[in-house]
Length: 382
Ligand SMILES: *[C@@H]1O[C@H](CO)[C@@H](O)[C@H](O)[C@H]1NC(C)=O
Ligand SMILES: [Zn+2]
Image (cartoon, rainbow, N blue to C red):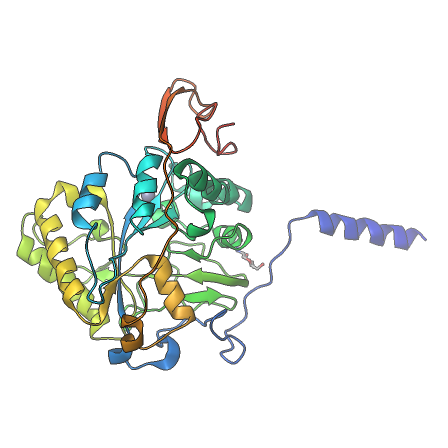
């Protein structure tokens, strides 16, 4: 009788603990099949030859969107078409602070992708390294709701995230992706699998990706996609995952050299296994250096004139990988669609906040004003 009681107590104790995830096993290509599962690797989805594979180009911007940076996006991105006549895509990894949600609504209504970059984006980066599942839930699970609410966009349109400083916290953020209706992560650089480049894969099985900023996920988290950030190579042969973090770069005023630098990195993908090519950057960088802006615009013009390269939203790459079709078929498909939404504009403030008792905050939103400044644990400012 005594033994039984001990057993019951033990079982209760285990039950109360956080669920322990199964360790990911080496990938079994027989069991791991598209569209739900893909082993990590440089093989082209669908088994196509490179010439039959669309070359996706991902231009992404991190941080708040607001009146300071929207002009760059309007000038550089709006009205830009791929060679198949479909609007060019870009993805915005947006954090809450300094974000004007009426502008998020505008980007969404241009058919561009809204993704998450956390509520707090706080320093130091050790906060992210040590973040638990609960922290990541507050930063990303809640942010999905917050973004959808204040920008008045469908919650299902928000699929991806990028962790601040690309600082992995093991399994935690990926579990949040699985539990809160998200689909993919785009925070994990690879420097080992750049030529040929690593294609997106799921975390059902153990990943072969190098872990540049540990800890990386090692649990099996079925159905969660990793869109690897395939690094660039700088002029001295060192790798960099964000363009504005490359060390040895052309002169910041030399447009031609920047165009060359970009094309050289692009060609590693385009003449290789056509893994998605990323131009991952912060808006301030291209706004501060007009020569780099012009070089990027020229590069995008070049891409838009190639019959087999496409500037798309990051989520569209995941869609293609799930259901790969050869480039000729891809080109003739209908363009992406989205449900247009309105923005009942409100200017709210001054709002007080628990996280900063001295601050008075203002928000531009598409909804009714919150009672307090939204922050961790109170994403809607109730
Ligand atoms: C991720 O989960 C696996 C499997 O439960 C575990 O072995 C590993 O320690 C976890 N990683 C971190 C950083 O918590
Ligand atoms: Zn950031």
